[in-house]
Length: 287
Image (cartoon, rainbow, N blue to C red; front, side, top):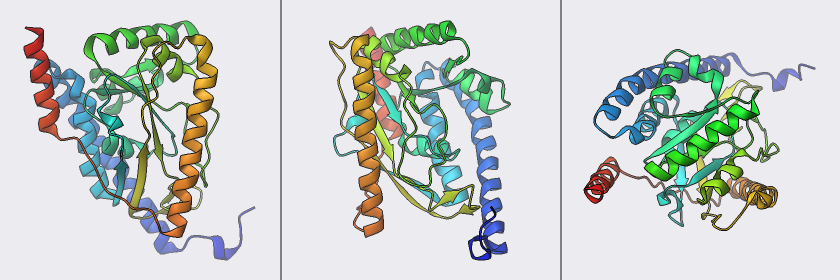
């Protein structure tokens, strides 16, 4: 079914949709190219752990300006300062790369499917910036990647950001796909807290199905950390379900606030100087 004529996007809306889509892809290539150079420079100077955060800021400024979308971070508990930690968030569309740029705290890396490392520009940047690649077709390789991530988190105090849904949902309303348990196994294995990051449904701003791409602000609610000390693998299923329920409830509440016009958006961020000073302090301690 194609829908009624009233449901079809106008020519002007189609032009806007494809124009912003093109702008987002151009911004992606520019930022990823910058990321290759920045990652090499940061690794040579001993700041390799800041690669994805630094390039994330470029995504926030360049792609955010290009498409007119801002993800506004609401972190009332200061949970983004947890380190090391596993950050988990819902995954709606390709524009979540901009969301990560707005959200990422310093010393954070993402996980990604192994095939992405072969992509020009983006893949090169991800390899150089310590992305944890997961081979979903090979459970042994996936476990080895997580083992390496645990060691890296402990030695470098590096955070890891994971989309537990495993793929984009393209949801038209507040909903979540079933959660995979890898993020929760990793948190329990490393005995680090989980920090849920809930992105409000933004299908009213970007919908590939409706050919809709508008300007706007999207709230991202960072929930208080959930500590895993003392937990074992047996606790993982309940932990994953608990986090999913919390995130879904928050998504529904954010949607209610949006439709009622009662949501209050106040941006927060972590500055470059803070991250660099923190790294200098760590080097002094090491001496």
